[in-house]
Image (cartoon, rainbow, N blue to C red; front, side):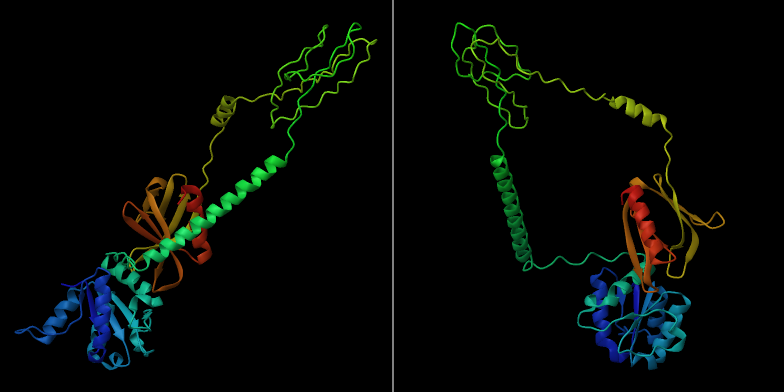
Length: 368
């Protein structure tokens, strides 16, 4: 038998048909056509379908609020706590059913486009215990447009990278190269003064040679390192050789071994922060249990108030998804859905601020 029973008035048959088709596209089986097979009575077929259904959707409209059959079926579903109402035509729902929040459907030509459609599907999934299927893949006509958008974004990114590279190249060329240190030239009394010849530039200035310096092979300067230029004054023939100034080595900072830091951290005790929140575990439309939800590096744990009862513990490694859940009865969206190992748990916080705090604590601690 079908999972969902649709209760409606005869005047709303076109709407009921569209609703049934949309629910079947979502992956659920629906009983809505009230054609009675030969040899069976109307009451017998309706009662059998209603008793075997796991969810009853009542379509409240200007016609159905005056139908005794719809009121009877809605009353039976309310007693079993499987009633999910839909409001159309801005109809005034009968008094005994107003305490149950109804999903508002305004555009019946596109049911999936209504704001209340997601709330309706969440309520049905909670009762049927079967998630709806993923939405259909967009038609091929949309894909070229997305491909052109991706290519455009790639082109803009390439232009930005080229501009950045050109800016770096201009900056690099405009920077003057570091001059090489020129050693002092020694001059003896027997030789006239000669022009200074560039020599190799080692890290330290070499000691002046007693003999005239011969021509040496020039060394290409290193751009990153800027070596202080050594002043080499010209020496008169009658003066003694002058030693080039010597740059003292800067003292090195004491080095710290990485192993010492690791050993120090291992000796210090590790403290694990635990955040605790007062929440309500929701495991059905009308079934819930108050308790405490604790978040620590070990994972997420729920304990019922007073001990015993329903409890669960989800290690951080098993968490797959943490998302805000929506239900018709919770317009403030205080529900958080924790998914681990293909099992979902829903907890309701006292307000949206506490819900966000729980989500932030799980994100910081477990990275979800």
